[in-house]
Image 1 (cartoon, rainbow, N blue to C red):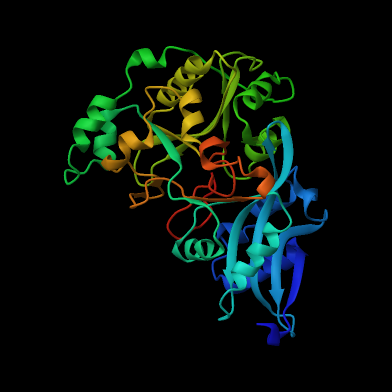
Image 2 (cartoon, one colour):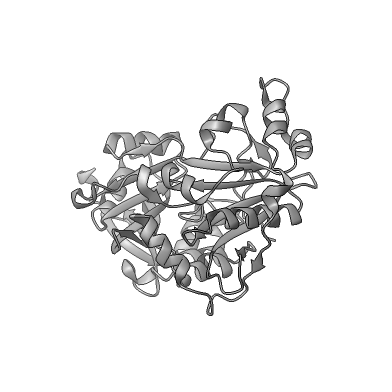
Length: 373
């Protein structure tokens, strides 16, 4: 590899980046080549200037001596709070190797890793999983995924499978009872005036958490270029906490599912916020709700029954993907998490990060095309 005189370039601008990606991908509706999506994710982020200049894309690339790009790794800078202190971190989004030179991706990962205190990534395929194993980075094969069966009959119609032993009985007995939808809810349309209590309470509960202050929630959810997110609370100023959710229609069917992206109950209001989320889901004709959270231990404190943990539903093959519905051997998102020695207390069991981190919160079909609403 040294004989090739490779040049390492930290960043390029959006025009160069999109031109690069589109040059290798025929279909420009691929979400990584969609200009609105790239502008929002990489350029509008409140963490943009942590690791890249204002006009640059947060991307690492290898060039050969003709300045042809051989490999790229794009990422999103972030802040992770550890015991109340912000640590520079990043979510690795995507590798693309355009050459037949093995190991370039790992070199880019190591370069990114050297710049930050905590390194995170979701959704590894088999190739990247093997690369992380060679690097020796800790891996979780499945993070926690809580589900709530809201309409058992419709769930069975939509994804029931008589070949899965006990699935029908599980769906039937797990259906949410009307009493679990008792709490009413307020929809928050402007975050400027809401209470900071959700964030203060969250930092007290989680010793390790992805930064989700109001500026992050506005960018990540309210300003998303394609997906409508709803902010739910038990009161109009979110003094009791809030949840962030989206409604997703099951492809080729009339039913919806509710994807819960964030749960921030102020301590003492966990049950009420859970009920409010379920009431909203029912009002939106959602037949199922789910919530992904890295820490199963702390997830149990904020996402209460009748939501069921992954250990309770894993064997019954509840679909994780709905564009179209698909059941995979892996029943939840996988994750890689590496950190500097000073942060060795940071682990999968105490980390609040959700499907809203990285690039998992997007409607995609099997061709990985952006689905606009």
